Length: 142
Image (cartoon, rainbow, N blue to C red; front, side, top):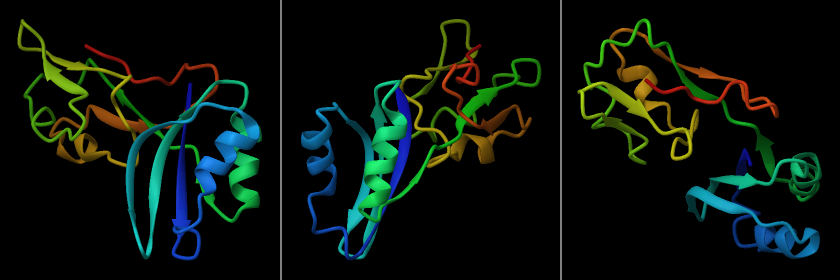
């Protein structure tokens, strides 16, 4: 699955753009996070590998701004498991393991739309990285 960030302006908000694309392309789109109001908003979605380009093109043709968000990567050499990032994670993608080391769940992480953990890390062990289709830049865990 590939994550894409959709940004809607206030003219697009009342339109059923996402549901139209799902129906037209017969592609399941998982909504991971959404922040939308009458003035616009963002939706973080996951689409199956292999259809990303087609779905991105479809959203852009309807006037939606589309980006592929950066994911989070942890430098386990720098991380000293202080836990500063744990309580701040809004999707509970970061936790303390049984041995009190910080554990990152790449499946829950929403990446750069959030990035609270990047700013919270006193060791600068967490950074945003560009996603590639080969999954080589997936978040790593400790």
